[in-house]
Image (cartoon, rainbow, N blue to C red):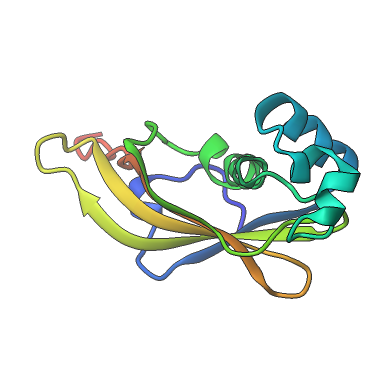
Length: 156
């Protein structure tokens, strides 16, 4: 679901927002890993073939970065986001391989309006990436702070 601006009030528990999909290439897997996670099964065909994975796989951090981009493009970039105090859990459940198409869903799990700062609230969410076979490859659980919808001037 694409909407113009997301405020705290636009989220509800159980809400699932399909944020996008993208196909991963071997070139980008190796480029990311070469710079940020140069373990042999991410960057070397022979080492990867001899590993438990059997071929080059994406770094889990690459997978998280791709998920982040899709969430920003669909939700956070057009929201009242005030950032995040952090993540609680990241799980890499299946390897991501060249040619995989990842589809990401943003699932709202909990909401809390701030009592000390009425201009904002916290949204807890799980981001879930699945491959083209429907296998969940990665989950990220965390929270984000969002501004509240501005109150209309009732005197006007």
